[in-house]
Every structure is written in C-alpha cells, then in structure tokens.
Length: 338
Image 1 (cartoon, one colour):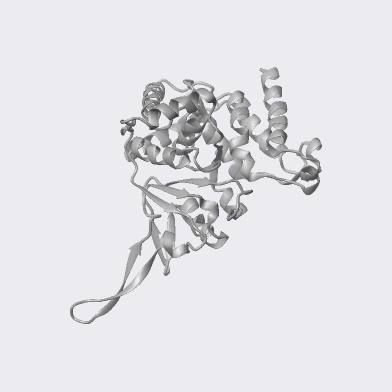
Image 2 (cartoon, one colour):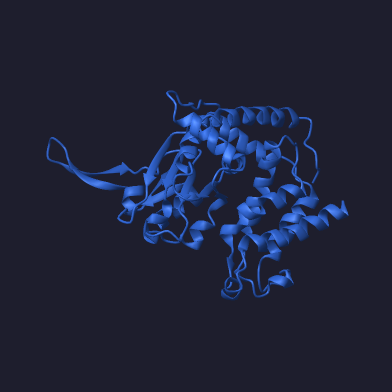
C-alpha cells in the first residue's frame, strides 16, 4: 500500500482533521485535561467501535460520555447497571395490550439500547447474564427479540464505564464481550494542575457547556473516510507481528512469553489496530499512520484481549509491561529497517 493519500482523499482528510480539532475544543470545557482519554474515546467512535472506560468512581467517565454524545450529535441513552438489572431492562420487551374493542395483541416496547450512543454506566456491577445481553447489539448492531431482528440506531456505539474489579459488588466481564470493545481506556487520577483547573471550573457560578460539532451523518462519513486512509506495508507488518507475537503456543509467539500468557488476542485485535492507527494519525495531524501509532495503541487495543498466566501473576508481572516489551521490539525493528 502507499504511505500517502491520493490527491482526491487529501482535501477530505484535511477537512476532517480540522473538524476533529474543533470537536476536541468543544469537549475541553466539560472534560478538562486527560487528552489521552479524550483521544482514545474519539478514536473508538471514528473507527466505528466501542470503548471501555476503566477507572475509579468520580474521575469523570460518565461526564465524558455525556459530553461526547452532545459534541458528536448522537441520540444517547444511559443505563445504570446494578446487580438486579435484567436483560429486558436493556433490550426491551413485548407487552400484551387490549384495545378498545377487546382485542389483544403484543406490542414491543424498545429498551434503552435503541439509540446511537449507549452509555453503559458501571457495566461490571450487573451479572454476567445481563452483561451478555449487549453481545449481539455490539457486534451486529441489531438485537433478536421474540424471533424478530430489530436494527439499532445508525451509527451505534457503546461507551461503557467500569469500576476496578477489586471493588466490592463487581463482576468480571465475559471474555467474548471484552473482545467487542475496540479499545480499553484507563482513566487515572488527574495531575495537580489539571485537578486545580477542574476545581475552579466546576465549583463556580457558571459551568462550561459542550456544543454540537458533528452530526450522525458526518460521523458516518468520517468512519468511511478513515477506512480509505492508506496504510503502509511496514505498518501492516507491525500490526501482524505484534498481534501474532502475543499468542502463546503458536509458531510466531514471542519466546519470552512462553509461560507469561494464558491466551492472546485474536484477529479482531488486528482489525481494531488497523482502524485505530488511522484515526490516531488523523487526530495528531498526519495523513497516514506510522509504527509509532502501533506502539501507542498496543495497550488500549490488546490489554482486554489477553490474560496473564497464573505463574506470571505469581511473579508479579503486569500485562501492560508484557505488551510494552513486545510492542517495543516489533516497532523498533520496523523503525531500524526504515
């Protein structure tokens, strides 16, 4: 593949880049600082995927999702996940109604999943059965209820917030559902200067408001444009090398990971990286992705698609360190060759 966009793509990519910069500026008054968190969330939307925001309560995860819905112009619904939440509370259900003439018929009442941006708040406080109700919706953009296929909004995205699993009242998400999230976004404590800005901005008489920059149609066009962005052969090789090196027990697995991983990422991880590196290049003002984008997105794309072995956990290894080590070797080799 070529490393540069064609002359016909160039104006569209530059225009989208300018609009995304405007969107970032519209988010900033409501979600101060944490540019990495904002960028990863935008990358998920631009790539047509879903994002899992992981962090302690009170760090602004819900506020960010609410702000993104406004800025991107998406019809949104919010579900507060609790232990007693049932699948029908998410998907909807059929009710038996009687009309004025005494005839009975079933009517389907749509659940909150029928929207364009679903905020799944504290998703891991619900039981695995309820969490799994989102599986078909996240993958196929439709749900099957009472034998009927019902399409969801276009576009359709899930931005879920998750509390750390060490907290009481949380359930681990099923691996199949985790794999449906394009990226995992770790939301940490803000630094001192950022927290000071938050303190001043949110405790005064007036609070910053978000404004709409995109429309659903514009977002769909942006997602189509992202897929047309060129990706160089070296970047494609870096993606494949990284993903395949993290699969224990395979011919291309990194030998140093032989007893560190229980399982590794599947092809969906490579697909996610392929889309995400394009979106990141655009957000950083470049017209085509590089190996540096692969390294930067290795953790967000792979962390929730891999698991440390018992022996690695006993040694105190961290999954983030394992990914960084492999990504450094893969992308370093590509840069040396260049």
